[in-house]
Length: 257
Image (cartoon, rainbow, N blue to C red; front, side, top):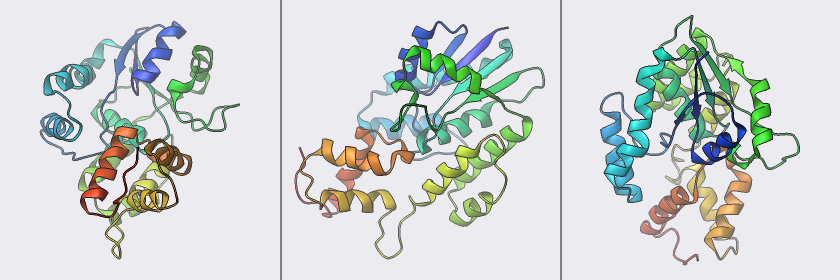
């Protein structure tokens, strides 16, 4: 049986290679939960935004992201697709895009490995933290997805693009079947809409509170943020971008090193 493993990033890839698990690999390197998305011209839109926001070279983006993602167009040669993802918003939005791009076939097994917790790791944040034995043991948690799960993911992706608060709230009232962590992630996403009274979202408000609490370094600030809100899966590069916006609005004036 020929299997494609879709991994959520290079940190997972590093550990996965050591497990000797058989199969081909697709490494997902996009962060669709951050920045603009669209039903059309998605990769052109993303390449432009990633390049301007994070200083990525468009040629590198093509090679590292788009070329890998194009493997989704050739799933017919696999008997099984196994997705290795995490509980946070970043992973869940990537996941629903990928599932929306997969055409369901009864003779093609689509499975998900997506732990929320790991025994013995109270501060578990991601698959890349695991050792090869821990990662390999997760195969026993593999859940086979059904057509209804892919349809739910496709609807969630459409709603994420439309970005309508009330529609997302309505969507959250249904049974999320084999994608229960998506519900938690979308609830966190709703907190990214601006508070009408402050015009700041939950992430911005928390960063402001933390920066005014006596914290004097970015490392300390980011660790304090992750301790409270690991649900977002934000990297230090993404937090840098948010801090820059807050500084441009003169909401943060002190320098953090």
